[in-house]
Amino acid sequence: MLVTAYTLAVALDLFCVFLGYRFLFQPASAAAGYGVPARPEGDAGAYLSVKGSRDGTLGLVGLALLFFVGVRAEAWFMLCVALIPLGDTLIVLRNGGTRAVAFGIHFATAVVVLIAAGLLFAV
Image (cartoon, rainbow, N blue to C red; front, side, top):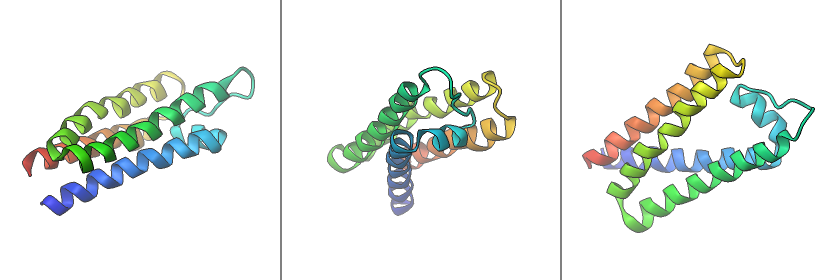
C-alpha cells in the first residue's frame, strides 16, 4: 500500500504541475479542457495565468511536502487540496459547462485526491 500511496500522490502532484504549465503556456486549450472556454473578449488571459500559477505551485508544494516533510503532511495537504476540484465542479456548472465535464473530470478528480489522502493516512 505504501508504493500505491506514494505513486498516486506523486502522480497527482505532477499532474498539477502539468496543468499549471498548460494554463500558463496554452491557456485557450487548457480553458476549453477545464470545461469553461475562455471568451475572446475581456482579459481572460490574466485569470488563466492565475490558475496556471496556482495549479503549478500546488503541485510543487505537494512534492516538497512528500519528500521533505513526510507522508502525513502530504495526506493533510491532499485532504485540503480536494476542495479545489470540488470548487471547480461548481464553477463549471455555474458557467455553462456540461455536467459530464463537471462531474466526470472535476468531481472525479476530487474523489481520487481524497482516495490518495486516505491511502497516505493509512501508511
